[in-house]
Length: 61
Image (cartoon, rainbow, N blue to C red; front, side):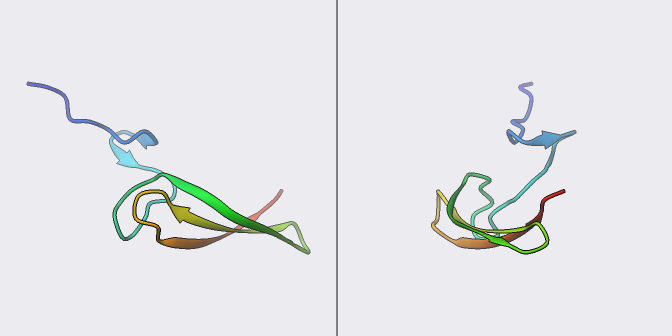
């Protein structure tokens, strides 16, 4: 019996990282980046499959 395919960013068969809520894809491109005081980076990402956009906030350590 063939093994089930795993997602490219998986740990033990579970998806890890940003996942599109519309289509389940993990392939995003960054549309723009804003740097905020306090080491905060805001990125606008777009799903390469369905085009849905997502805003992420990251803290630079």
